[in-house]
Image (cartoon, rainbow, N blue to C red; front, side):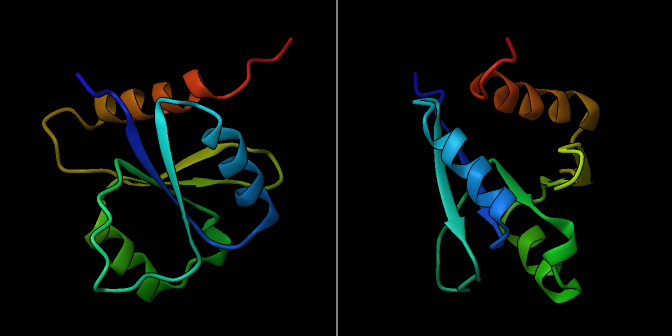
Length: 110
């Protein structure tokens, strides 16, 4: 049973680059970094991480078409902001699942 999750990191901020490097260490995640989307690509991420300050409105529409689960990371506070969630029966449970996957793979504070 494959529990590996695909994470698309979209943007070019230093914070996103650092986060992608940390997430890439986990064998549970396949981290894909993109600065621009190409309509011909067949990326099927479980979640997209963005710096919302860098996403233009037209890009946001393209990202939702790729994956409806979009999380923004605030570069000053590192707070996670849910920008979009799939239309599931229980979107809160789905959000908790994805945040759980990310928190499980990130280094824990000492």
